[in-house]
Amino acid sequence: MYDVIIIGAGVIGALTARELSRYELDVLVLEKESDVSCGASKANSGIIHGGFDAKHGKIKSEFVREGNQLFDELEEELNFGFRRCGSFVLAFSEEERQKLLNLYDNGIKNGVNDLSIIDRESVLKLEPHINPDVKYALHCPSAGVASPYELVIAAAENAVTNGVHLLLNHEVLSISSNVEYYSVHTQNMIFQSRVVINSTGVNSDKVAQMVGDNSFSIIPRRGEYILLNKSEGRLLNKVLFQAPKKNGKGILVTKTFHGNLMLGPNAQEILNPDDVSTNLEILEQIVTTARKTLPSFDIKKTIRSYAGIRATSSTYDFVIGRYNNSNFINAAGIDSPGLTSSPAIAKYLVRLVEECGLNLKEKKHFDPNRKAIIVKKQNHFGGSIDNEDPSKNIICRCEIVTEAEIIDALSRGLYVDSLDAVKRRTRAGMGPCQGTFCGPRVSQLISKNNKIPIEKVTQRGKGSSSLPHREDKQFWKKLEKMNSESL
Ligand SMILES: Cc1cc2nc3c(=O)[nH]c(=O)nc-3n(C[C@H](O)[C@H](O)[C@H](O)COP(=O)(O)OP(=O)(O)OC[C@H]3O[C@@H](n4cnc5c(N)ncnc54)[C@H](O)[C@@H]3O)c2cc1C
Image (cartoon, rainbow, N blue to C red; front, side):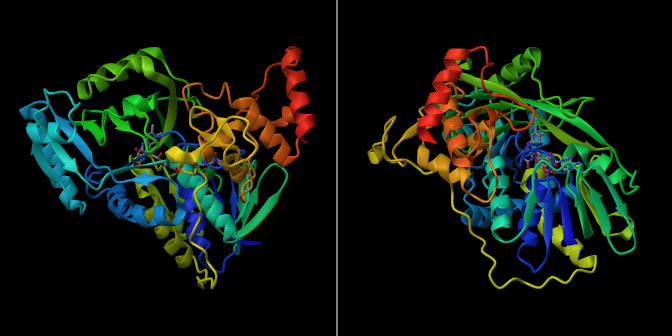
C-alpha cells in the first residue's frame, strides 16, 4: 500500500516525485518504458519560456512564470544544465510589431516584468548574425535553455535517493478502486495507493478513462527538429522566435544548453501518438523558415533530425486537478510550455495531494542535492583514448566523454541498460559520428558494469537492438573477445 502512485516518469512525474520525497510518504512511480524521460520530455525545444506567450487566463498562464522563476534554484540543486540566455521575438514589418505589442501586454498580465521592445540596431548589436532585415524584437532576458532529459533524470535520481520507489518497464493497464484506495494494475503486478497521479503525457486521456474520466481527449501534435554541429551554435546566444503565426510560436532557432544549433519545431496533428518519424518536406520548410531568422548557418553541419509529440488536450489547456473531487489527480495534456511550468506544477500537485487528506510531515533528512554526471573538461584535462585512468580514458571522441562519467551514469539509483540511456546522461553518442565510434565501447562498459551479456545491451531499451545481426561474425567475435577480457 502506497500513499501516492505517480503514473509516468516524464518531467511532471519525476519533479512531482521529488517534491513528494520531501515528506514522510510512501511514493511509487510506475513508468512503462525502460528509462525515465522517454516521452515529450525527451524531445522538445528545451526552452524555459519567459511566460509572455501563454494566453492570460488559461491554466498554462498560471504556472509558466512561476516555473520559469524556479529554474535557478533547481539547477543549483540538481545540476542538469540550465542557462538564462534570454529570448527575442523578431518582427520584420510594422504589422508584426503589433504582434510584439500584444505579446508584451499579455506578458505583463502574466507577471513577466523584464520585457522590452527594442529596435533593429539594438537587436543586431546583441545578435549580429540575425537577418539584417529585422525591424524590432521583443526582448525577454529571463528566458533560458535547459537540457530537458537531464532535468528528468536528475529529478528522478534525487527522488530515489530520498526514498521514492521507481519501477521502469511497468505499464499501467487498468485501475480499479474502492472507497479507501486505488488498485493500479500492470502486466504482472497490482499496487495499491490512496492517491494516484496521472502524468502520462500523450496517454493521459486513456489513463484518465481507466477511472471513468472522459472529460478530455489528447490530440497528439508532432514537432520535427534539425540539430546541427556546435560550430553553428556559435552564431547566436539567445532563443530566436519569429512573430507568432496561426499555429503558435512557430519555428525557432536556438543554441541548446550544450551548444548545438537547433531548428524547429513545426506542429502537425497526427493519429499515432508514437509516430516520431521525420519527413523531408517538413525539414526543408523548417530550414527555409529558420534562414529568415539566421541566414548564415551551414546546413551541411547537420547531425540529425528527430521529432517529439505534444500531448495537446481537447481543452487546448493543461488539465490539472482532482477528478470529481476524488483522490485521482490529473496532470494531463501538458504540452508547451510544460517543461517551463513543470516545477510549479509539481508544487501544486503536492498541495492537491494534501487536499486528498494525506498528512505532509516534512522529512528530517531530505537531501535536495544531486551531483552532475557530465564533468566540464579544461584544456589541461589531458585525456586520451585507451588511457588507463578512467577519468582520462576517452570513450566518446566527439563529445569528450570519459569512462569515469559513463561508470558514474551506470552507478546512480536508476538502472541504465541501453546506449540511449547512457547518451542522455553523458552525451556519449550525441556528436557528429552519432555513436559509430563509442557505441561498442559504451556497450562493453554497460555489459561489464551491469554484469549482463553484451547482446542484451540495446540501443533504446526493450524491443530495440543496437548491434549488428549475428551473421556479422567478425564483429561479434571481436566484441565477445573484448567482453571476456574485461569481465
Ligand atoms: C516538439 C515539442 C516542443 C516543446 N518545446 C517546449 C519548450 O521549448 N518549452 C517548454 O516549456 N515545453 C515544451 N514542450 C512541452 C514539454 O516537452 C512537455 O510539456 C513536457 O515534457 C510534458 O511532460 P510530461 O511529464 O507531462 O509528459 P511526458 O514527458 O510525455 O511523460 C509521460 C510519461 O508517461 C509514460 N507513460 C505513458 N503511459 C503510461 C502508462 N500507461 N503506464 C506507465 N507509464 C506511462 C511515458 O512513457 C512517459 O515517460 C514541447 C513539447 C514538444 C513535443
